[in-house]
Length: 130
Image (cartoon, rainbow, N blue to C red):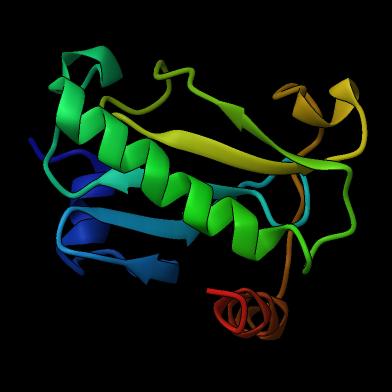
């Protein structure tokens, strides 16, 4: 059965897409721990990130870097934090989270909700920096 991220990649499930290329997709998390919390996923369904070959893993991190650099001027933060957990969805992914302190990367923090208009504004703002 396809993972939820594969279903997003295929267009079966809608997502707040930031950018994509032939290999990777970046989109905003619908259960964010911070405003601007985004996910970067390979379009190829691979469960464990370290099962990716070295070249693909490197390209994924460079893609994530491009997205993080576009996010930084949009969301007031000291840094864009990166996390790879990989337990909640069986599809390799990187979390990009705007943070001002280590507490902002706590995945037990309450999840935030944003309106469609807020997501659209976040996408437009980040895309201006890509």
